[in-house]
Image 1 (cartoon, rainbow, N blue to C red):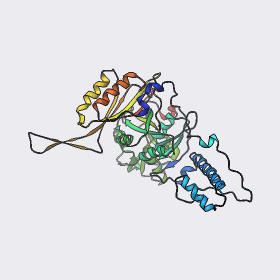
Image 2: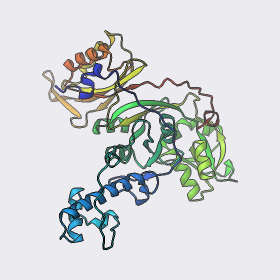
Image 3: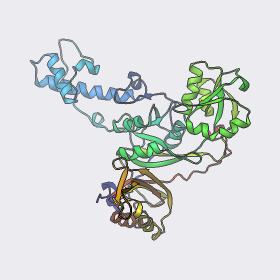
Image 4: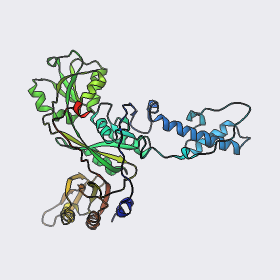
Length: 426
C-alpha cells in the first residue's frame, strides 16, 4: 500500500505559512528545445542570468582550488572544477574567463547571494509553457504569473524537464477544454514526473482566422492549426463557405508563425489575435469558435508543493489505482460523498505498466481480458481540512496506489464568454 506524499501527510501543521504569489509576464521570447541539449540562444535573455551566476560560482571554486594547489597547472585546475560540477570537459567548455597577470587576487569569500536559490516569493519567476509566443498557453502563463518571464518550449515533455532542471521555476500546462475534453498527454506526464500542482487558471479561447496581408478568403486552399482548434471551428469554417483542406500542426501560434515565415498566400491559420500582431498577419474572421463558451483549464506546476490553507476555496487532485480493477471505484467515491466533498473531475487512463488484466473464466473456455485503469480525481477541498484527510485515509484502504498531485487555490476570477481578447487585455 502506497502512502501519501510527505508534504500532505500532516497538512494541519502548514496552515500558518504563505501562499503562491502572482506576477506579470514580460514578453521575452526564450525557446527551450526537446531533450537536455538546449540552444545557446536560450540563455541569451532572461535565463542567462542563471548561467552567469553559475559561472561566477565556478570561478570562485576555481580560485579556491588554485589556492590549495599553487603548483598545479591551469589544465589540472580545470579538471578539478569539472569534477566539482559533475562535468568531464575542460574548464574552457564552461566559458570561464581566466585573469592573467603577475598578481593574483585572493579568492573571493562566498556570500549569501552566491548561495541564493531560484527566484521565489516576491521575485520574477521563469514560467515554461508549450508553444511559441502568441499561444494560448502563453496567455495562461501571463494570467497565472503576470510578472513572470515566459519560456517557450516545443513539447509538453520539455515543459516538465525545464522545471525539473531548474531552467524554469513554474510550468503552465493545459489539462482540459470545455469542447475538446481532456488533454490526455499531460495527464500521463503528471504521473510520470514528480512535479506538484500549485494552482489553476481558466482561460477563454477566442479563435481568429489569420492570413497574410492582402489575402482574401476565397483564395485559400487550406487552414492549419492545432487539432483541437480545427475541431472547435469546424462548423464556422463551413458557414464561411471555405472549401479548404484542414491540416493539423503542433500549436495555434506555431501555425501563424509558419504562414508568416513561409509567405504562404494560399494558407490561413487559426490562432489568437495576439498571434496576428506578433507575426504580421491580418484577421479575416474574428471569434470563429463554434461555441462561445469555449474555455481551457490550465494547471501550474512547481518542484515543491504549496502549503494548503482554509481561508479560501481550494481544490485537490489525486491519482489512484487498484490491483482488482475498477470494482473499487464505488467505494472510493463513497468516501467523498459521505463527507459532502464535491468532485469536479474524474478521468480514467489505461495503466501503462499493466494495460491488460487477464481473468480466468470457469464457465467458458479461454480467459476474459479487461483494461487496467488509473483514475484521476479532482475534488473541492483543501488538504488542510480534516474531512479531506479522512477521505484520503479511507481511499487509501481501498487502493493499491494513491498519489496526491497537489492541493491548490481554485481559480475564482470572473469569466465572460463574449469578451474579446482586447477587452480582456490578452
